[in-house]
Every structure is written in C-alpha cells, then in structure tokens.
Amino acid sequence: MAGSALRRLKHDQPVTPLAIWANALAKTSIVAALVALAASHARGGLASFVAVLTLSPTRAPSPGLGLFLFFAALAIGAVAALLAVAAMVVIWRDGRRGARHIIGVFLLLTLFVPYPAWLVHSNGVPPFLADISTDYDDPPAFSTDPAVAGARGWVPGSLDAARGQEQVDAYPDVKPVLLDLETDEAFAAAREAALHMGWTLLDEARPGGAARPEGRIEALAYTLALHIPIAVSIRIKPANDQTRVDMRAVMRYAPNDFGAGATLIGKLTDALEDKDSED
Image (cartoon, rainbow, N blue to C red):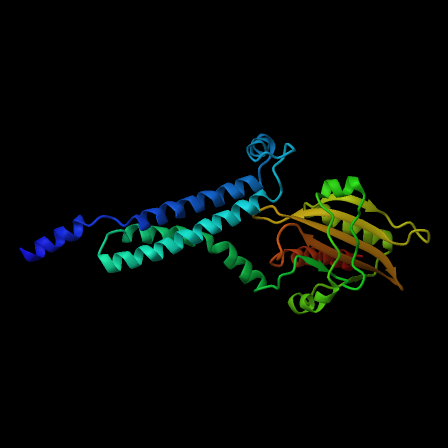
C-alpha cells in the first residue's frame, strides 16, 4: 500500500514549467536556424518575400540576415540549455516531472554540433582573422569605385599588418604564387579559375604590357552554409622571369572567417599551379 501511494504521489507531481519552457525554446532555436539557412539562400520570389518581411530597402534580403538569425538561434539555444539545467535542479530537489522534456532539449541542441565540429576538424581553432592576404606588406587593394563598391556591398578596410605573424602561424600555406606563365596567361588562368569556382566577378583590369604591367581581378565569393560574402582581390604582376599572383580575401560581418578565406586562396592557388604544370 505504501509503495502504491508513493508511486501515485510521484505520478501526480506536475511537470516543472522550466522543462516545458526549455523544450519550447530548443524547438524555437532549431526553427530559427532553419529560417537562417533559408534566408541565406533565398532566390527569386522567396528572396523578395524575405526582403519585404525584413524591411530591406532592396528586393533582396540583407546578406547578413542569415548570420544574424543563426546567432539568434544559438542564443535561444543557450537559454534553452540553461533552463534545462535549472529544471534538472528542480526535479532533483522537488521530485517534479519533466525529465522527458529535458532529454528532448539536449537531443535538439545536438543538431547545432555537426557544423562547428566540421569547421574545427577542417581548420582547427583559427585566430580571429577575417582578412587574409598572401602579401601583408603590400596587400592587393580593393576598388573604391562606387559601382564596384555598390556591387560588393562594402569597402573592406585596411589590412592590419601587425597581425601578419598570426596568419603565418595559422595558415603557413597562404603565400604568393609564382608561375612560369606570361602575365596575360596568368590573368586568364586566374579569371577562368574564379569563374569555375562560382565566384562573381566584379571588376578586372588586364595587364597592358609596359604601360600597365599589373593585372587585377575582384570577385565576390560566399560561404557554403550561411552565404556570407567574402571579397577577393587578385593581383597579377611580373616578377623577374616569372609572374607573381597575390590574393586577399576579406569576410564581411564576422570577425573570424574560420578558415574560409584561406580555403578560397588555397583553391585558387591549386588551380593556378595545375595550369602552370600543364603548360
């Protein structure tokens, strides 16, 4: 009889509201993350719809909208986790129900783990750098022409030369490319590689012989998950009997590109070196 009464008393205990709120917030965080991905990759009518909802002055949503929503999702998820921990304390102390809700919270929040885990696996724990260059002393410049800057969306600031050693330590393979190609051939190879990788070309200046020995290409690339813009500047110039190619990649919005800039430079470097070996 006493055991039956105890089981009935335990069953009659209400679910702690903290567990209910934690579960609801965890579900909200997942929905917000999915909305962030959808907003980041919205095209056509969906992009116009998102732009209207977010009061964007153009027919396209802000490029930083997905990142903002994803950070909001992470913040909501963090609050859900804190409430779940508080609910565990209440359950332990008062014997209330809600363990099932708490388990659901942590199962839902594990959905956030694969992407950052993949970033850390791919690039380790990189320094807080969002501006990467193969030449820290004289980095490739970005055009300030209003048409180019407008298409890009912003004008990247000056490179902080004092952080050059941090880049060298984190990305030792980010360095100038020396090619046994003529300058105009190297320019064509860089342009072809940028287009092949799906970058959007914003501006270009072909090498013009002795009058204008340097060539320049500006492009816009995007991260895979949240479609965050990365401005890329490529400089092609003669270097003794070779052609030197320098690159600079700057991520918008985020203070840490988690290796995205170095990855872009690495892909372009590999494409140029493959072209050089073919010739």
